[in-house]
Image 1 (cartoon, helix red, strand yellow):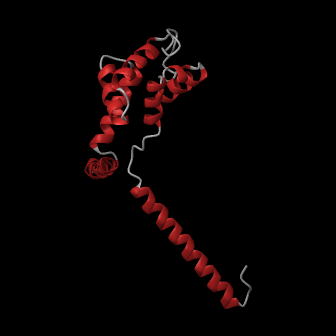
Image 2 (tube, one colour):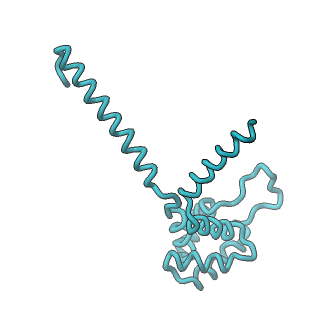
Length: 155
């Protein structure tokens, strides 16, 4: 019985996620993961992301390889499972702290572009915010009407 009830709930969640994250957003997230993990697909991932950001793909790949091979950006050998994996934000923060953001401007520009790229569509958030604002306005109108009805001054 519970399984029959649970599957439609999962389907509803899945449809909601699919409507918020389209295939292009999912592809960008996958490419970012390839960049952060510095694996076999690093060069191709950086090329695709650089073309999206309208930056020089060759410069981004070259600078990215230099940065990611640097010992300061690699996870330490004594890292435990509780240590967080490297993220685009941590890489960018290290670039700023070490002064590499000025030297490797293209890769840094790509990282900043990716960090500020909106991933979800904000239409559902805007609709929710509008409904909340409308309810607040309505409650304010109701409260003012109640004050007027009682003969109390409005401030």
